[in-house]
Image (cartoon, rainbow, N blue to C red):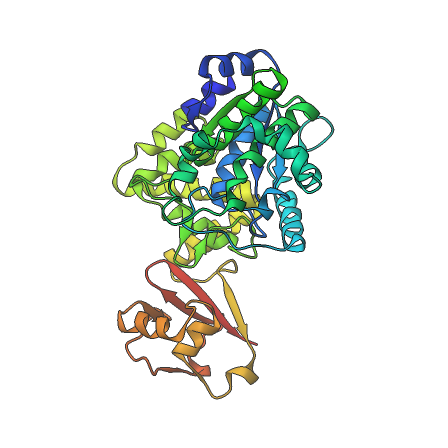
Length: 407
């Protein structure tokens, strides 16, 4: 089966520059393709994971991925989907973030000789000379046409800096460089990158007189069209230090019934016949499909051991109230705990709430339980006698659990 058809059936493909030509190309030769990742944080998140899964499907079909780290483009910041300018990062921060990305990507793609390439666009962008670059590359871009691009249009009212206006030209130049250096013919990205991708294909046609292709993926959204991968405490990260394997598992275990089939198709390698079967389950049966989804996605991102631990912890917790080792845990020394600790201090100390006022509000709304008992008093003091042998269990809302141990 042509990998284009696999990606289409699983729901990845949103737009293409030349659908029939891309399908034919992917069917008859090994194609070098790329996706760019700007190093704006020290971990990849769930949105990146969808793109890595697409890259993995293509690599399995014999194509060669280039993971392009945006050491240069991150210095400028992509205005796409942003209502205001991104925070400026230092060269050192960007370099550190790019290294973190590189380590994470090695879990999903085979970077052994000839299989995949990882490269940083700082290599060619950071040493550009301004006037020669404008003469050689800038002359191929029409400002009128650039201003019709969605990524710029949405920013015109609030203000678009000249710095960010350069982003499209730089991304297009990346495609040209990868085309020259590695024979890269295809750029992929989220659907919000469409304008930037077609700018790159157009630049290759103008400068090299050759055809290049672009394809975008659907963004990971729920059945209501809202972006997935966000929780009350922020993004769902792939780094286990930022989102624990248990919390990661729980995120997928708790997706809405209507989103199960889509997530199984995009974020696992389960065959589509099985995906459709699981997605069609009704009522309590759909929970089985959610457990399979959570286990499979956690296994791909964190490995089989962590997936099993998270699954066992979830089952133990929701079964008999027993507690297992993978539940997020905070250790507090007996010196710090003293004669006792008030519940508001405990919630901020465990990072279940970011502020004392948030803690107070949650308690007043009945959103906090300690050892399965709802906390009604904002002045409650937790004492040593409240701790069981394996610790104290705090629950925020219905689904967020946290264990506290005295050491």
